[in-house]
Image (cartoon, rainbow, N blue to C red; front, side, top):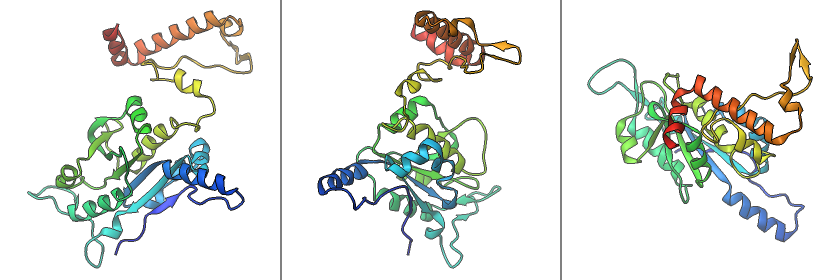
Length: 263
């Protein structure tokens, strides 16, 4: 028998509310964006997602986090979740008859547009565009792999999309999943206090973000650029745009090339 998934964040109603408010909040909680994590290490969550703005939004019920422990679906007395690769080779592979039932359990709660993602170094690169798209979904299920990977038949059966944070390999998908969820949750309505910060940050317009400054006006002999202290908003905007373009050209020529192609 599998155990119920472990959940984080607020899923109960405050008894002090009026009946109408109770109904409104129940509807809000039911519609909240959800992420379901299928993992061998549910204790890794919420991790950093329980801190700062994402943690506050989790407690407020703006999004929900549920973990599904793969070990509960393990085979035999020792709850085995992996076996040797078919055809030989190093390492171990996560079994289809373990991962499959775990994903099926998670997907019982899916509604609307709800993709299944697998954190994998061979997956498509995760970027800001994908984060925006996930934020528009009703929820997402994320499979965190371990060992040499997951039996391919599971990925095919559930039409899983493989996603990568970059051209490197980690010991498991948990940290990568947290990074992806963080990038998505901050785009949900009401999570960030200032919506303009999303529009101006790196990758929002295909450019890296311009340099930022604050007090003191001079530090270690370095002064804030005069234009930022001028109060002339048009000149400030032009300066920031020029800085963003220069940074993108020098640090991310791949992004700059895409912008030039659009023009």
